[in-house]
Length: 290
Image (cartoon, rainbow, N blue to C red; front, side, top):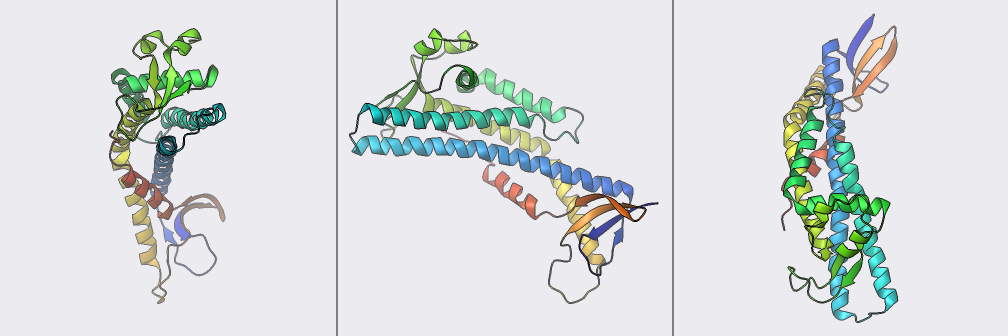
């Protein structure tokens, strides 16, 4: 005979709470939703972190270029290498986000619903934003043909503030000389020296819009999932004897399936780990603007 329980997974006295099989499935679905939501938020945070590292590098180099007049070949080569490293990290995490986000939230909303919404938003960004289109092509070129940074120009950058003195650029001429699968119609939109800092800012603006729109798509389900787990915690705690303890009576709580005196399924039911996801979502709740 199969039994379904709310119980803490530790030794010692406790009042185990019987539940229905349907409620156990609800617990499992709620946890699966929140796991996907956590992966979703961390993936964007990784992308944003690499973008901030790139911006920090650019700001630091602007300052050094202003006060440090070392213009040797070795110095420029080292700076280009470091710029390539930052941009490759950013392009890689952007690709990871795009590839993995379409696999999130498959447990509710209809088969492929979230994936189709993600693809729709990414296609719209590609259509409206030159920066997004160019980064899409540049990422493929960086993976298969050449590193993204072709050169540096000192002095005041066009379209930039007085503090932004250094232009890290991709060369249209160099891309044309070894274009590969780089779409000609996208390349035709670009100038001769493509400002990678402005390009990446435009790209991140679009990525933040995509992420926020996707979060809104699943926000109600995430709230329902937290409520489902919170109810389980409340029901378990209320069933425990009042022993005067101030500790967490729900420590190690799980939704458990038991058959023939053996546990055959365990769904942990705590939310401390999901609180991290909630904080990330709050931090990244507004679109990036430049």
